[in-house]
Image (cartoon, rainbow, N blue to C red):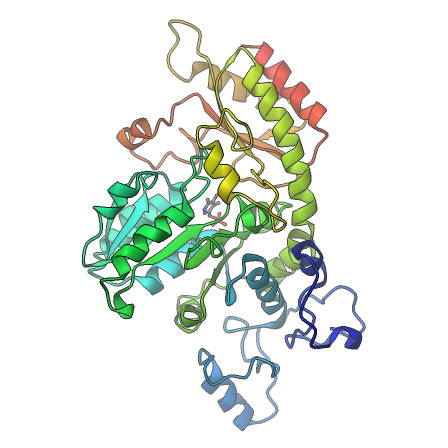
Length: 436
Ligand SMILES: *Cc1c(COP(=O)(O)O)cnc(C)c1O
């Protein structure tokens, strides 16, 4: 970066500032005269000599032999390249991990993490409620390569304790859980995993992986609370503008080399053009967006809580949230302020005699046709407010019994608050609820 920023002082800036300016000593790219880092578009890279090419291949995925203060030897986009590299430096800094690697989607990041940590014959424990594609990745694709999974209630730590087997290698969950925002106690799970690891050799340790997509690092940093690895979809809150698909894994040094080798060979690398949007627009604006999302979410959640047509309202920022104490403990911004996020889940009351979910469908259909600032669409964390019905949409892959057990009902609505004036969002919701 600019020469006057190249000094050895410890960073004293807040995360919000650092994600706007990046790390002060990036070796990724020299752009002394650029205020905005350039977008790179080169599938392959010119090498000065065969020896330099050979060195590049020798050092790839050998971070023990590499000197991080030396500019990387770029060879080919799928291995490593500058724009994505700068995004990765910032993501590692944001989550507080040793490294970040960016993938073509959130699912590419999650599948790479599980495939790197697990092999045939291993056992995985996950919370019962998962993002639909993660659910089908675990129950369909991992099962096919004989990785067995137990899907349990991770809110019950005794159940977790009694599910460990000798073959267990990974504990996986999202918190807040998609879609109903149930929380899993990250530090609590860490304790239980530690008890089990005490009796194991380091190579057999159970690793804890948390999907931090719903909260983002602004609201919660799982690595600080004891997780080993964080997966995140860049498509959602971090990307923020809904222009690109992407994902990332943030974790400890020992995972870097196997994971970058996996990415090289399975090929789900994030395109530099998508990386640039997250680097220049998404990450730098997250703190400011989240402050405003949360402010609006608080008012909108109160409006829904008090509306007679609403049967149930779940928002981690309100005292009526069943796990409010846990929310206050683990959902915090970098200054320690309560950061309950931008997601709301609510269920509307069906008229007597109507089939379950009739009112919810009617509400969402009315919004799709008539609302100005609420859009019926999946995804979340964007500047536009989005609503969807998890039961029949994002969580359609989940079997009926699992949905019933988790209290996922046909009339449930998931609302992702955007940057519109909250009065306009409430006006749309109020009009929609009046139609019921
Ligand atoms: C969207 C989402 C994913 C998958 O991310 P993609 O970028 O769509 O592949 C994973 N986990 C959660 C919680 C999500 O919401």
